[in-house]
Image: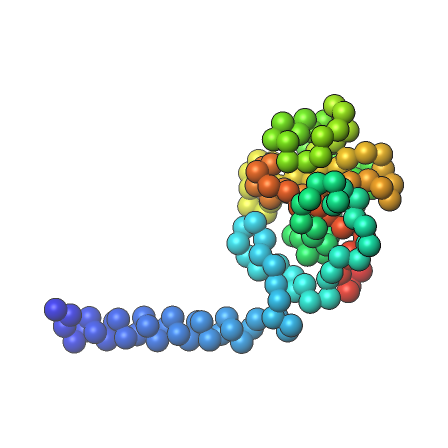
Amino acid sequence: MIGTNGARIVAGLLALVLVLGGIAYLVQPAGGSTTESSSGAPAAPVATCAVRAEEVPGAAESGLPVQPLCALPPEVERTWELIVAGGPFPYEKDGTVFGNRERLLPQQRNGWYREYTVPTPGERDRGARRLVTGGPAGPEQQVYYTADHYNSFVVVDVTAVGEDA
């Protein structure tokens, strides 16, 4: 049985949890809609971020869900900007051929897909996040994102940027 002091400690901890939960609710971003980064931390609000392109390259043939670039972790957009600029890339493996051994992306000839590291805050190595591009650079280039090292992908609408951009 819990003594008087033990009951006070339990009651104090419960009150602390309730207060912290209330604070977390009050500081939630306006609009309420957020995505979660792969680290589990809330990312930017996505209320003003939506798929913009009528036909996102790679979406129809892959059958994968489409995510706007601005709804993904900010490191994805920075990696995309490096790809568009042609580098320089922070990792030696960036820009190498992605073999699609998992067969989650549409079948293409060898060398069609290239992979790029999306840094993960707090990771000491390359982490699990990647952008994979398919085809020649330009408006028809396919862009895919994986947060779990090729276990799943989404098609990225790179035309969708946040309200700040």
